Length: 392
Image (cartoon, rainbow, N blue to C red; front, side):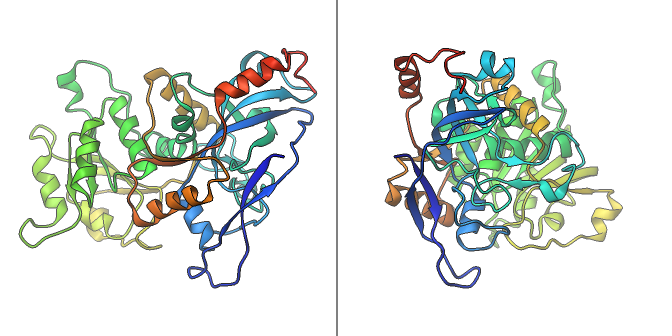
């Protein structure tokens, strides 16, 4: 019998409660018109899941499966699926979209009331990728880049989409061509809090676009690993009286020919405006995709005088998701995976992933492997399912 990983409701106040995990049996679903049946291979955690377990996220469902990141193989098609489903999706690995209700408007969801991240969500109670099987509309999957492992593929959707929108749509990071000397003077990006999934995706995307990237972290090891991924340098935000504030240390690292930052990609909030206002060029951009320090940020007159723009950025559209996946495929970018638990029934291992997230120990994504993609291919072949036979 297939399984689904959900949360168990217990009593407690938001921020004090921590809902336990529970594994439940569920029947294998059958795809309806325009739907595809997906055997899920891996799913990944996000900070959102940690907040959900503390009841610090709106619209929680205790019946919906956990997790908004997933990769799997399409094993069957429902009636009325398109030729694309038959030719491009059937018996192939796909990435599952991490949110619903936003088609293509660059300004934001066309109908905000219909937009939601999936996983433990009342808005889309059947959708969440911590389960063995799922049926979804064929429009909600994207062919998976072949170079990615199952764990790497599961690590991509939500953080990749969030980073893409913040970096490309909001901050306007260009795709730089030309020789290396020109590239080094073209566009400078600061990514704060390196080690988390969105920050790492933003780093990888920015480097692949030809930008110069600097990072902040509390860990020298994480900065060194970011440099290995292409960052030009980084500073610790653990201020000390001897070294001075981190923004001054970062200013000393910037190139003489372009000694300022064009865009900041930030998920922490707090005093980021005050810290970076003297680093940013006039008209520079702070793209804020989260506020883990506090739900408020201070805006300063210095930023007004510098014409600095603060741009909020949340997730992204289905069109941006397709663009992001195409870029990953074209540049053969591999998301960073920090640790993997194997099996939905490994509750102790999954709890250890949540502890890594709580304590900030991870460098990259935390992934749950659910099934092997090779076994799904052999299962389909053994069943004798061709493009026509697999339509239900």
